[in-house]
Image 1 (tube, rainbow, N blue to C red):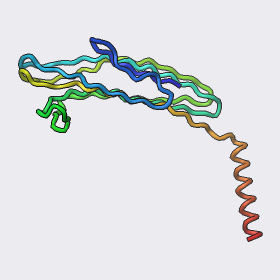
Image 2 (cartoon, rainbow, N blue to C red; image 1 turned 120 degrees about the vertical axis):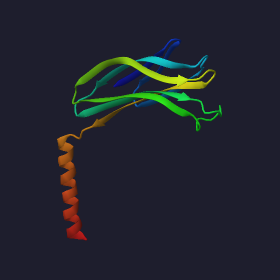
Image 3 (cartoon, rainbow, N blue to C red; image 1 turned 135 degrees about the vertical axis):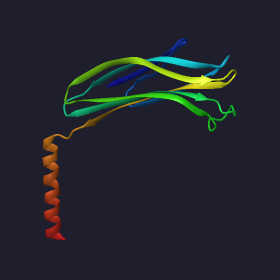
Length: 161
């Protein structure tokens, strides 16, 4: 099972490499407004989602892609005083089970907008979070043997204790 997430910017891309378990990445892009204006940021994303399972196995994958626009609060090395201006989040999940496969390619664009004054600083925060897991379903024979073993232990425990 694989999960790949990419965010594209004008100067390149930002991604989580294909994950088999879990992955997380974040990035901040700082800017300074040159004049009083409304600023718009458009960020393209693409998600490749491939799941495959074996017999008696279920695989799950989910991902969150989020972008946020912040206004710098005054203390440059601290984000505690920063103000959230706009945010957008995309979440998805899916599953494949019992020997099936599933794949999807999803893409789109996040648009963030905010008013900034001349020489005001801010940043766009990009967050990617993805995970993929597999769970094996017990074979019916193993369940039957387990119940027989527990029953036998219970009878023997009552008889000899």
